[in-house]
Image (cartoon, helix red, strand yellow):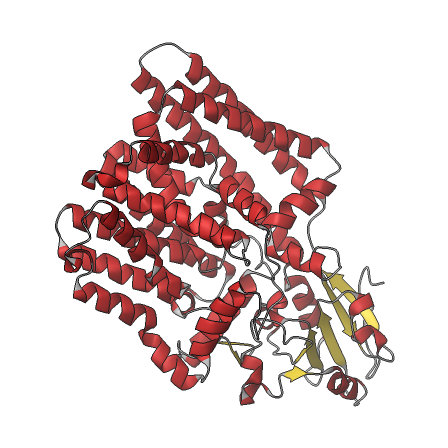
Length: 566
């Protein structure tokens, strides 16, 4: 509910929505564009789905966010179905709802990005392959491999490589890797490679250099921190990444950890009956450990592990959910309640700088640029922190009561499981409200509406800084701006294309336009002290909103004085 309540978050959502809207006009999913410039950072599946949704229901925030929300439901369905196959109905229910109530996953279920689509394809791939192997249904294994191809088409080519590697290693540890055709049937391999990489042939033909950019610059050189086309993203440290990833999957990492410990202690990889669980464990641990070891990490890089964590957690509750596990959950809830209460009672500086500084990409970009992050005031977060503290405190008390009450262990475990589920479900409205707060505060919509009111047909609109920081500018204004100081961005590769020659300006060209006899408006994501516009003659700062500043020259007159203008 409430998917369309607030405008697109920028940077973040607006860019993806605008790319899909331009795809809807061009009808060419191979040549994606933002602001008319070639965009090759992500595969086309998300944008094709968004464009199809816009064609059916019209372009809007609700329609755009419905796509990742439906993808999240698909991921939950795959997780629940595999859990039911491996553990029975109750285990499947716990696995599915554990994924739903992982706060990190739930947040991206309401956010226009390819993450939940990627997770859905991965979850269905594992579900189909693992059940197909267990039930000797080769068609299901082939369909699962094809689903991994869809994962590559959704977000990253590693989606078609990593999962079969984890499954193959699990089979090898059990001595069941041969014959290869049993778990790598040729129709599935062809489907995976065709879906994951087949479109690269057409993309390279349409945009020469695409394959080099995707494989070398965006993967190899990115890991080596030596990209030729870098953007402004600021990576997390290994400790920050692990903290964000584990907190985003809390408290389910506790019972998942119990399952992992049991698998290791029993050397379960030697038992063919445990192969599905070993494969899931290898995938979850591999995603987190390999990302932590990589020099480049962003907060959402742990999400592909979450469906496996949810399944391992469900088994932990079903098989090892004794008093100690219940007490551990009570302790974690108590710690989270105390942390939220301390934040609620504080002045908010540490919360805004440390917590949001680790979990929010845009906040990290602003800090690296030496300017204040465009975030709501701490007073707006305080009620949500208070509500979260109460939810966690209630969960701690109820879980503690389950841990120390006498009675049959299985029944106590079932009650404790549903106490944890209920507590996490009660937290989700606060997560959704926090997302809405941030989106509403830093959306480009406010500046966009101001421009719609003021800009005349013969005026010129320019954007200063990487356009993805105001990705929905054209969405909300109907104007396509040239870009100044915007080559260090996701459009850096497209900026070299011939059709982008008149889109990317240098400061000298802006200065010529500034004094050229027309009224020029500049939306800048650079603070006034760092903006080239501030040094232009007659520059007037007429509005500031969401980490953006709106400038205009004095030529042409008739500039209304906006409310609250400096």
